[in-house]
Amino acid sequence: MENFQHLKIIISLYTNDDDNDDFLKGQTMSMMYKIIADALESQGLLDSHPQDYLNFYCLGRRELAASPEESLCNDNSALGMAQKHRRFMIYVHSKGMVVDDEYVVIGSANINQRSMEGSRDTEIAMGAYQPHHTSAGDHGAPPRGQVYGYRMSLWAEHLGGRAEEWFRRPESEECVRRVNAAAEENWRAYVSPDETTRGHLMRYPVKVDRDGGVGPLPGHECFPDVGGKVLGGQSSLPDALTT
Image (cartoon, rainbow, N blue to C red):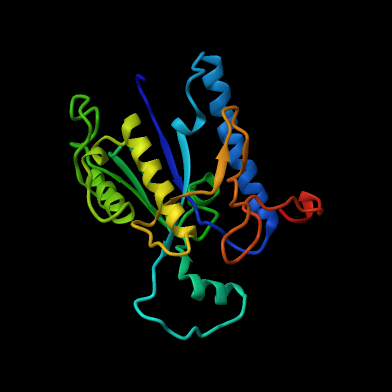
């Protein structure tokens, strides 16, 4: 497909005990996927799927014990289950974005107008690019500067420890398929009772329909170990009281 573009968003697997937060997260995902689904339908691209263009991921790690050891917590609490299964979410707090291997944003500021306009939140962020390593500066060739190197390093770290040839063309359909396959494999290992994850990047456990509808991944309706619905539940309180 010409001008194929893909957006990869990494979020925390879960943040707190507020079901309404997870509900709103699911609604936001659905809104984004429905916009893509409607655009695909309007262009007659009926063989395409919203996840060809947008995917959500999370970070986690599961490892086997080197030797039998006594757990510090033997109950069925979240801590006890985490120690038993040696399965841990990697919390995502820093905010970063790499655009087309030529522009990077890094900082603690949320990537939205409120946090980045410079006069409201007490946050900090920086944006950078190299004038000689842009698509325009390289006569249309993919940029191969330090922003590209930074993105390649991150992918190698979180997708298994080595840079693959297909990392070099993140906009390609092949790369999207391979990243999704690796993320799917890491999720499968994460929820397995006897496997270790090869990398940290995992698919976010939702199922996306062709029309953009979002539901829980079958068999994984709740977060492992800690419980709670992946897509949460709507609060009975009016929004005006909670926002």
